[in-house]
Image (tube, rainbow, N blue to C red; front, side):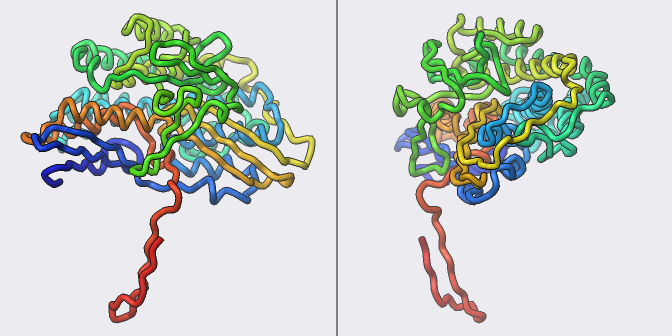
Length: 476
């Protein structure tokens, strides 16, 4: 830190590596700030030339937190390349593993990443403001959190063989059915998990109710919102059309997922490797939007499970039916989705087709030149996989727009607003800087998933002799 700039590095309790630079004026007040993401992914380029069907396994290696999302979006893109329609039981099983990931991801974020701020306080000692502090403060709650995450991971493992990077979805469907014992075992614990989710909702709502003035002002700003919906406007996480609402709540666009490039463009800034998507027809920056739990609930008209829909109705009352803008409401929206995911698991397991062996379709042609687009709602937001292939099925182009990338502008804006509201360079405290980080944590970012390179990556190679002398240096 120098007199005119504060650097927060790394931003903690998120996946990946990011930093925030806060620039002060001569009076020590915040003038501007930047949210920098310096990681480099590069996966699109090194996948070119690979057989398209390998992508369901390759792309989920982008991340160990949300691999199922990449696995499923990739499988849907491969369905498109091979021009396959998976059987209905396969779609149900794909959605089931998706709900397992929602349970483990949303549960982990609330209890392990967000709760230290909410339960212990933004100004708590950093030494205890973490998951271990939660364990010490409320061991019973911590045990419930671990149990909830374990349940979600076990669903992934039962279907995909592993809790991380499963081998399950393939072009045209899935590679194994669900057996009766695993179905019954999942159902046996479901009521307990719904009870834990209700506890989480209660904690979240109680905190919001006790801190409403802060919640309504903390990183609150107008934007567009994006998410998948069904034909009746209901929340969808695995399939549907993409809906975008503007800041007033009007439907700005609704379109098929494979038409996304006609609606979405990406802006770049020199200070981040993470691009800034926006809605083409509104332009940059007017067309910026938010995704993830808050985005999905702001675009949806209803939720298709009873408990979650009742909470959704309360959520809609927060701003009298208009979009809810405060970033801290992401936590409430995330918990509503947690309840939905558990209820949806019950619906899926109650469907007679869930135990069917009709789980895969196969290509009728060996000529595979074409394009496939796969879109799912990852826990963090709308995720796009777009593949083009030659007639041998080898990839000629790969494009990914990852959930966190869609929220890039929002995280930059949110952290900047909080910095201006709370950071005072003349009497700086750690709690001030933690609030800036907390604004980013609302979005539960997965930064290693999301980054692209701008132009060429900087590179320097130095040739050093055995005696330590520098013989040559080249840079790009």
